[in-house]
Structures are given as C-alpha cells and as structure tokens.
Length: 53
Length: 256
Image 1 (cartoon, rainbow over the protein chains, first blue to last red):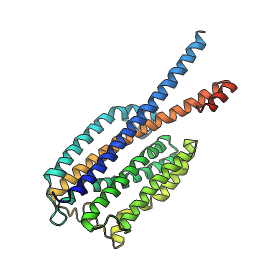
Image 2 (cartoon, chains in turn brown, purple):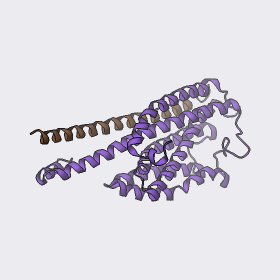
Image 3 (cartoon, each protein chain N blue to C red):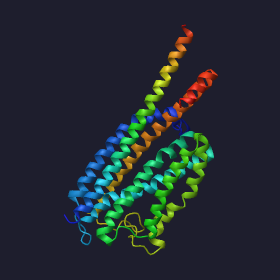
Image 4 (cartoon, one colour):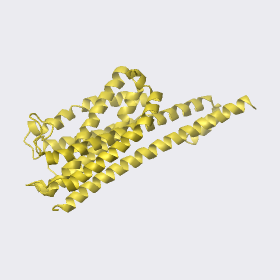
C-alpha cells in the first residue's frame, strides 16, 4: 500500500475526533442527568420534611 | 398518529429518543465497520492517486456532514425565530459542536489527502477557504451561545446569525463550479449521476450512511443533555427563588 503514512494519519485523526465526540456527549449526558436527579431528590426530601416535621 | 407538535414536546422527545438512540448507534457501528472493511481492504487503488484515494472514504462523508449539520441548524433557527419552539434551539445548539468536529475532520483529512495528490497541504482556493470559514462560523456560534446567561435570548440572537451564515453553504457546494479551484468538482452529487466507479462508490455510500447514523445518534444524545441542562437551570432558579434571602445570597456566593 503506497502513501501509507497519510492514510494512517487521516484515519487516526478521524477515529480520534469520533472518539472525542462520543466521550464528550456521553459524559455530558450523564453529568446533567445526575445533577438533575440529585436536585429532584433534594427537593422531594424538603417537601417530605415540610409535610412530616 | 403523532403530530409534529406532539413529537416536538421535550418530555415526549426524551422518551422517544431514549428508545431510538441505542438502535441508531448500533446501526451506525455496523455500517462503519462494514464501510471500513470495504474502504481499506475490498476496494481498488486509484489508477492515478494510488492508495491515497482511501482517504476519500472518510473525507467526503465528513465534508457532507459538515454542510448537512449547518443546514439542519438553519432549519432549527427558522423554528426558533418563527415558532419560538425551545426544542428547535436545543437542536441547533446541540448540533454546533458536532458540526465543528466534522468540519475539522474534513479539513485535516483533506489536507492529508492533498499532500500526496496535489503536492501541497493547503491552498487558498474557494472550496478549502469556504470550508475553513464554515469551521470559524461554527466556533463563533458556540462562543456566542455561551456569552449569554439566558438560553432563550441567546437562542434568538444565534438563530439570526445562523441564517446569515447559511449563505456559505451554497458557496461551499458550488465553489468548484463557480471558480477555478485546485479541488476537484463534484463526482457523486452531480447532474448526470456519479462519475465514480461502482467499486469505489459502494464503500463511499456505506461510509456516508454510517457517518450520517453516527451524526443522528450524537445529535439525539447531545439534545438530551441540553434538555437536562435547561431543566437543571430552571430547577435551580426555582429553588433559589423559594429559599430565604440570606440563604440565597450565601448560595450565590458559593457559586450555585
């Protein structure tokens, strides 16, 4: 295979970009969902405290 | 049958996208695996370019998606400005980093293809320059979204800029026809049908479908994250309003 260095570099860049995108999207999704769940759990806790002092 | 308005409801979108997302991601992985095999092992070398033509199988789908993503953002911008639908702004904002990444990929792989084919990494011709402008526009839009505290206000301002910048998309597409460029003219989406041999067209189309499914999966996941982020912000604002003044001030100092 000729021009192997260019081909490997191009596919490596593409793989790195795709891997970075997937990692960022998955991490962002989990972080936001966890924060939202924690806030909702705190709110439920406060509501329960007010109704059952 | 669901209407478009029902589908555009954020809660319904979260339910539907949660069910569809694993299937789209799986289909994308399968398509990309098949496409990589066809591109690297089952397709012939070009009679002029040799094996460097294999870079085409990632460069062309990345370039198509760079333009498709901006077009999707322009449609979403119309949804933001005309119907003021929050999901339209969520769609545009979630698509921007993905579009920037695909544009970057198209530029770098194009440069790596250009060196052995043209003898240069870069040339300021109309196609390459207009794609570089597209990348700068993506980055500018991402920065502008982050410059405003209020998402709805940011969405409307950015939507106007997205529509202004959409003029660059036909310039990118037709730059190779309107000006004398080093970049070759269109060889797949052209009048008279594709000019590529079927042995190279098949891997290219399989990779294009794989990249498109990957984009859909990433976009759906990024939209879900953006909806969660906005719900979190709303919940924090509501919590801050309900809290006593002293506690809210202390929380604000703590960077809530």
